[in-house]
Structure formats: C-alpha cells, structure tokens
Image 1 (spheres, rainbow, N blue to C red):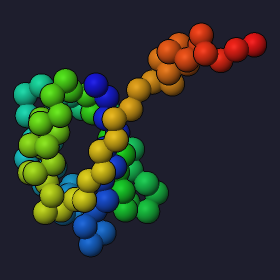
Image 2: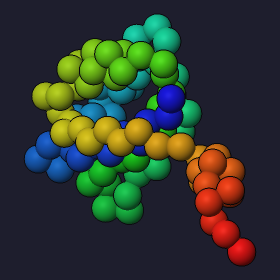
Image 3: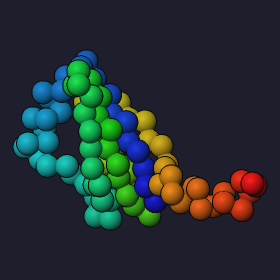
Image 4: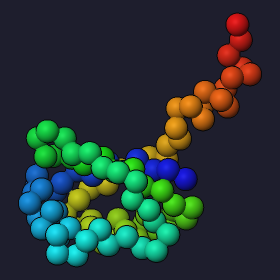
Length: 92
C-alpha cells in the first residue's frame, strides 16, 4: 500500500529534523520503503510517499521521530488506478 505522510515539524524546527536525518539516516524498519519527499517552501512541512504492506511498520517509524515531528498518515492510490476501478460506473 501507498501512504502519504504529512510531517509538520514541531516548533518549526526543521534543522533538528535534518540534523537527525544526517546523523541517523531515515531509520526505516525493514519492509518500509521510501518513495519520495517534498518540503514546503517555508520549510514547515514535508510530504513523503511511503510504501509497505504492514501498517505497523509505519507506526514503528513514526514512534522514532514523534519528538520532532507531528504526523498525519493518509492511505493513497494512484489516480489512474482509481479511474480504472470506476470506469464501469462513470456512464456516458
């Protein structure tokens, strides 16, 4: 499954987040795959696309960084897959 992870940096402390990333890496548990990330222009939030089959892997990863980051995790699917699933119901 794909998950959009919205990270809001606590106290707008982006430097602390990137310092830990530099020192420890992403700290991903085995089976949790990083797909890509995007940071807002004001460095207040990061949007990460993650992939895994076991949501508890996301929970373990979030627990490691919850002191620096507030997380929102949204299961997502590619738009083309949604369009294909709805194709027969769209009508003319």
